[in-house]
Image 1: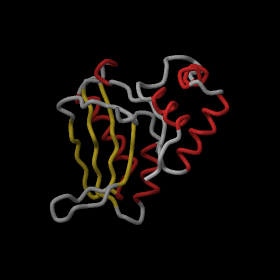
Image 2: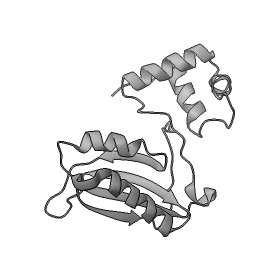
Image 3: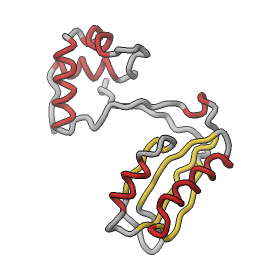
Length: 160
C-alpha cells in the first residue's frame, strides 16, 4: 500500500469534490492545495504513473443534461479483434466510455461494452445500430442494458 505524503493528501483533498468549473482549473486546484501549479501537475502525473490514480475525467450527470435514456451496449466480438474494435467504438463522439470485460460463460457472452446516452430510448437504439454497423460481421450478438437509476458518482476520496 502506498502512503500519500502531506502534499499529495492536500492535492487529493482539493480534487475530491471535483474540478472547479473554470477554463483553466489547475491554478484553482493549486490554490486549494496550497501548492504551485507546476507541483500539482508533476504530482498528478506521478500518481497516475504509479497507479495511485487512473485518470482525471468529467463525470457528468446525464439526467441533468436531458439525456434520460442511458444504455450500456454490450457486444460479443472475437477476442482477437476486440481491442481494435473497442478503439473504434470508443472514438465515436456519442460513446462516453468503452471497455473490454471477460466473458462469464455460459451465462454472459459479451466482452465489449460501450455506454451511450440519449434523450430517449429511440436515440440510444439508433446509436447502438450505428455501433452494430461499425462492428459488422465481427459482432455475433449485442444488447442494450438501460440504467434504471443514477448511482452516486464520486472520485478519489481521502478517509476522514
